[in-house]
Length: 402
Image 1 (cartoon, rainbow, N blue to C red):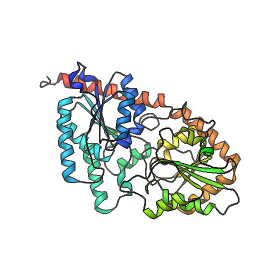
Image 2: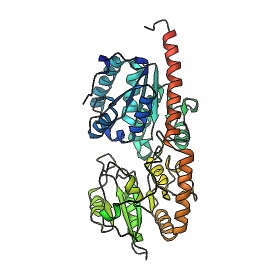
Image 3: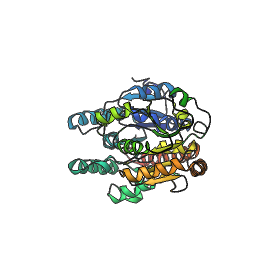
Image 4: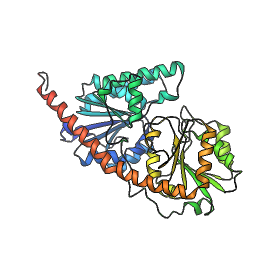
């Protein structure tokens, strides 16, 4: 669904920014970012696989979009078709700056923008899928990251730990990689995500006196859902009644949950599954403790949203997630995949209400200080303006510039 053709309007191409991602699901975290660049004077054009989340973003923001199918899994023939389509599209649009992110769009978009001679090419590294891959697949994913990084002028990482890993894996030299603000690509809306009243418990038949462990995001293996379920089941023997509120959907990705695990989640009497919800803010307010036992991240938005809602957070010591929690201050961190450690952390916070309240209050203050949406997006817009201006000057000074 292409909203309109920007080539038909007399727009200054030097303000044209192409943002490309693989799956339309990523559009869920692009709304504020797109709006910030639009307000800064950029004409934003989206490129990603077609889907309802792309349609929603186009409808809300009025941004132009070019749906272009891209397979998340390795698919050489389809990838070649997508690369050709991206290259031809960039030749038509002629942007001065592009931002590609997520593994497949990052690779194909970076190559296509190099071939199209885009003056300012930015690769936004949101995470490394290769962290949970093994063998040949891991080597292929690592090669893809190195190629994407080599084709870009600048690499932005969502967190300091992600940058450190990228340097360690020799994806790119440290001098080429930046982390803006204190991490994150959009920050958090502190007005929308805040403590307050919620009718969610009543709607989902969760007793008001029960403690609720919450989760928000895709329900997949890499998010640690299997470990979450095992730890939660162990806590059913404690005297304090507790429920689990899982806000998200079963994603049909490469790390999709097994059918048996899905059935256990659906059938558990104290687990509530919401599926996709457009506004997650009221659901955070129905939680007491937020749990994200993820195996890999870039920088988890869900932790910022939970912290802004004044919730203590339990997450893992994996890349990205460890940047989003101040240990023993805003929450607890455990080894990824360690069910015993996760159970122990959940049990501790379940039994210590005063500790939860202190951590939740500290989390809100910490997020306000470091991750407000206005602060994070302002730094990103300034970075793009500075790099775009430099690229335009070099382009115009070149003898072959038209």
